[in-house]
Image (tube, rainbow over all chains, first blue to last red):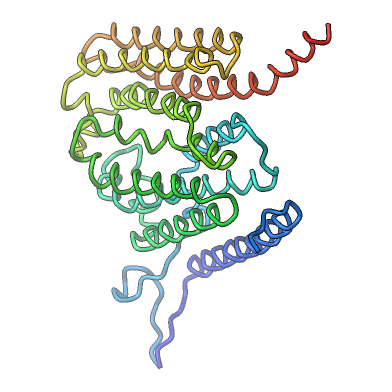
Length: 47
Length: 316
């Protein structure tokens, strides 16, 4: 079995990328939710 | 059990990324993006009609991300020449912080997401122009024109000129003469702006084989063309007043700004050939950025203030 030992710099950068990706995904959820609400309330949602 | 050291370069097959979110953000060319955001906002504000403020924010976000995606694709393709020029050697790919594959994947994913969300949330005309803009910048300009012709930034400048047209299309769902004028202001401004930079960076461009006009046609021809495009930019700058979608006040401001641009270009024309310091070219480069921000700010202020002034004068 092979394992990879990350350096401290690699661990830190991976954690940073994971946090950034999480923030972006959460942002997308909020954006899609608000777009849906706006489209329904303004009557522009295709049915 | 085999333990492989994650240190890059020692294992060959395994090269683990040390890229930070900041490096990926740098791939988006944030300074160019700020100009894109501003001009797209201008298109959105100037367009007749109304857009929900949140949808307007989504439109600007998608346009900004799309522009950033094309920047990442540009950096992926140009990594070889970026590594040689001092201005670009510290970019994430030549500096070794982000791999070419990571930048390519990042650029493509952001392109699909920005175009897709703009189409689904706003309209597909705006999304179509955004998709064309990304294609034009990444493929037509970066892969084809940039290393082929000295007119690279004249034609390629169209990519940077589309954002106000996209902003306009987000509100109206189409393209009109007014949005074409906004496009032309940036399109005609780009050569004077970029050739001013190329003049004092011509040795670097020459070293990497990019046929910028000063290297191909020489300094005198470049200076004359800078002046010609500055005059055209000054003229198109007052077109909104001539065409009736901006006030005389805007026309006066745009005229003054345009005269200063032409005057700065005359300063470049008078600059001795072979000048080492190139101060007039550096001044023109700086002023050209200010000019574009000022023109679009004046257009937005005029659009927002003119109806108020008309209301006040009507009430008196």
